Length: 405
Image (cartoon, rainbow, N blue to C red; front, side):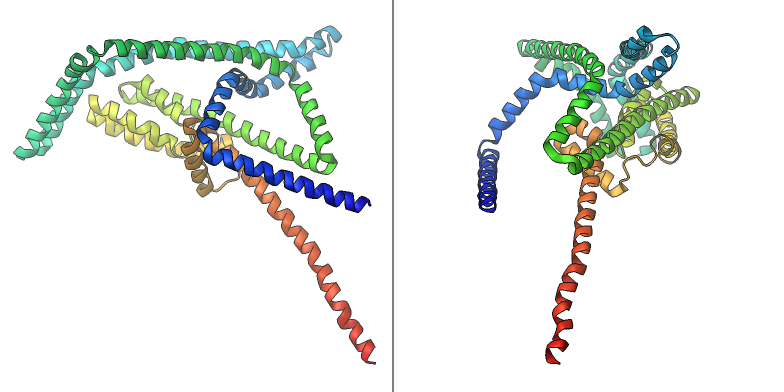
């Protein structure tokens, strides 16, 4: 009777799962736009909590380190100071993070804005000087010289013509776009502010949240599978924290080295180019090229010789980063080969843009580890089942001579 009930229960669950998958497939095929709009609406509502979770995850290692030091120090001071250690660790970590951001903004932002403003003002003159420099090497080729002259003059005069013919007549639309940009900036600051508050709550209750998640895991899956899930979560945390924090530290060091090297070589736009190189270096594999190409073009408008020197310098710097600095900081955190790193960046970058390029490698590393463990588990099951099948087939053969005798 129990076997019959169990059989019917499994059949009902299978039918329910098939119906649910059919409904999901129908909505994915015929209501994808509505699902996408609902997903964007939901993400817009939950964005402050997403931002807060990201901030809390980035600050968690520093917060744990400060709390351990405060706990070790407060054990000699009594229970009151020991109770205050978690709150003090959060406050100290947030103050240090805000101090770093403020110092970077005070030191870098004014120079960065001046560099961008000077680049915008020097674009027409830089194009003319670049064209004249190219024409020196063109020689007596009159056709090519006329083409370069027409191109430089046309580009130099196209910016004022575009402002007078397009921007001024469409000023109302431009004001609307600016208002939309202001609204987007207000939304961004709102998400950051609420996300910062959410990050404080997440950091304060991180141990409680971890205990609740562990209890829920054991209540849903049992001891064996819950232990496997916890091991995989720990692996994912190790991969993500090691990769993201390592890339941030590596990119900061590369940006500083680039700034110092450009000052020594007297290459223009040192601050602007160093910020571009440092930020884009966070992206694995493609980051150095993404940052080097626009930087090279910026310097090329001022001095072609300096641009060539910069290109040689950045190639040496990236070799140093890829072969010496990067492996020492990151190590073999992901365990992926170069092919899978390239595959992860292209796939997740195509699906999720810049954020996908940042998190694609650690996400794919976790998925790769899950698939690898499932493959090994299936192979072990087949290997353990194979001797049983062989012994079952060998028993009749062994009994056959007895029957004949």
